[in-house]
Amino acid sequence: MHSRNLLILSVMAVAVAGSATAATLLSEPFDTAGSSANFGAAQVQPTSVDSTATFGGDYSTLTLPPEAPGGLANTPVPEAPNTAALGGVAKRGLLLAVNDGSTPLAQSISVFTGLTFSGDYEAQVDVFYLNIGATGSTEDILYGINHSGTLPLAFRNNNATGVTNDGYFFKTFGDVDVAGPDYWLSKGAAIPISASSQPGTVWADGTNPDVPARQADDALFSSPPVNGYAPSAVTPGSAFRWAWHTVKLSYVQGIVTLSINGTPIATYDDPADTFTSGKVALGAEDTFTGINAANRVIFDNLLVKSISASESWTMYQ
Image (cartoon, rainbow, N blue to C red; front, side):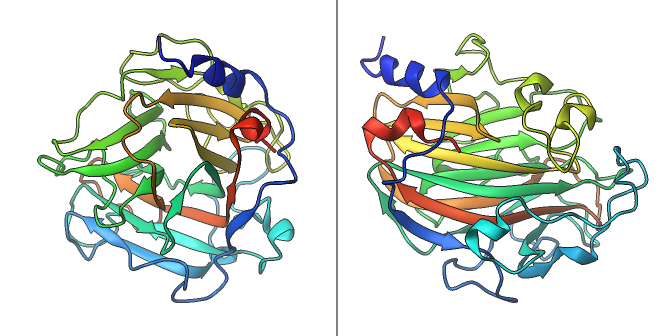
């Protein structure tokens, strides 16, 4: 058993307000149309013109589909939860579209911060998956830390044979019409992408750490409500669909933790401390070839802060 297991248990067990002593390393409201000084150009795997990243995109023009629940049918995408806190412009964010052109092609798109971060830190971002049903609606959300910025994120898409990654990144499943795990963690390596999540991942509900991945448990998303309704009411097995969520990734002494809406989801203790510094990554992936030009993954209000090991179990807001 790794010597940091006590820290893992502390991280997983407690979800209280973050420490006020954490230093802000990057604040990005994604307000500027066309580009961001804090990010490089989007990277697509494989190379394709069918995926785009729109910085400063106006998501007030995007509308939820008729099947959206809770009185949200045919209404505009609501405001991200942390816009006021960051002082951002209303309904401006990073809009990612994947596999939305004329050539059916499983692919991913990712953007990386220009800054490289080291030591213990956390990255928090608001994310919304605008899922429009029918063909091509199954897409995934990707977010990672400690990346070089030279290898686009890619997980299980059909064109990923021989693709390599670095850093640590999670994938969350955004749709419900395909049976399969809802969360995966990938640790980059100079080998083709594996169909299994990283052994040693500890899931918040105590699931065996070496299972391939984690099925959704709507109870993990039931509090607090999002957009006026509990995400568990959205649709079983896909809490990300049609609702804003605040996702936080942290790296503390070789331990990578994912939390959503203040709830710890998974922790991975890398015994080799493979990636101790790097860039923050945001991305989207279509694991299949079906085109859907209406789907969007929306990111808003990225905040990166340094934290100390003593603060690691009080980092959730």
